[in-house]
Amino acid sequence: MHEMSIALSIIDAVIARAEQENSQKVNEVELEVGSVSGVLPESLKFCFSAAAKNTIVEGADLTIHEKEPLCRCDACGNHFQATDFIAKCVTCGSLKTTIISGRELLIKSITLD
Ligand SMILES: [Zn+2]
Image (cartoon, rainbow, N blue to C red; front, side, top):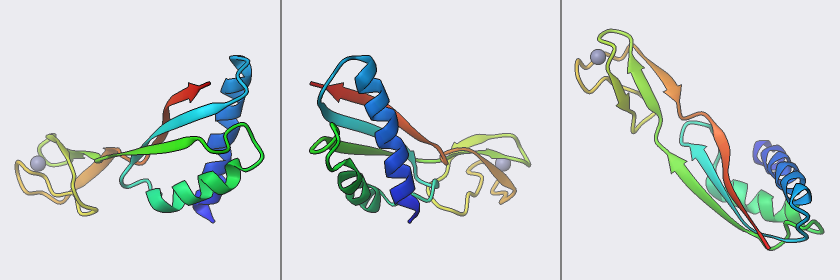
């Protein structure tokens, strides 16, 4: 499962950070997920709590902020926020557009005890 491997790498990163800070408990993890990253937030939450079992991340709240993708129009150079998988330029109507962000998954903040 795609989300499970993502959840495991997030937890690894969170544990590494907590160890640096000599913390024994993680209270909250905030993520920023691009809405075209292919990650389903509900599925990721489920995998996160399963993968956190028996680690210092167990019981931590996971907050996911979904981010609309940013596109660039290849025809007129306009930058705009896409609200759908079909990114149509809002200025000239061209469908020749490139997604320049929105596929990423970032750990925004980690709250330690
Ligand atoms: Zn355009």
